[in-house]
Amino acid sequence: MASIKQVQITFDCAEPERVARFWSEALGYVAPPPPEGFATWDDFDRALPSEHRGPAFASCADPSGVGPRLFFQRVPEGKVVKNRVHLDVRVGTGLVGEERLAALEAECARLVALGAVRGQLLLADDDNESCLGMQDIEGNEFCLD
Image 1 (cartoon, rainbow, N blue to C red):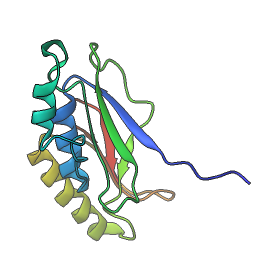
Image 2 (cartoon, one colour):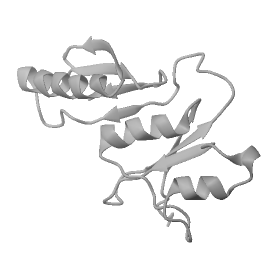
Image 3 (tube, rainbow, N blue to C red):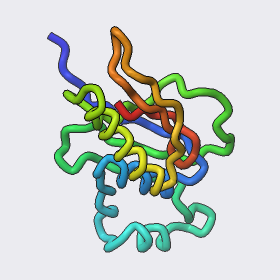
């Protein structure tokens, strides 16, 4: 019998700390504690040699331990093409019609205030409920579902 594995979702980005703060706010996630012996991540950063200072990575996790850890790593290149994988932020689960649209729009407004960009609203059809495409602060696509 195969065992269940934990999953981490990794984002390539230009500003890991900034993107991690966005997703922490968007999902209610929290940053991990700093390494043992350091009161803050800034203290840890100051202890590094100067050529390694500044966040090359950041992460955040579901405080309940249920959702996947998100990891953000600095890369030199910018985003060029559409994501092949994206997150669906499930804010309308169990809702239909106008009630679902209202939930999507309310969450969209909250995330736009954090720096997200609104995309296309796809209205319900015979097979799918409505969803709203968006982009995070570095252009990574995600959906409000």
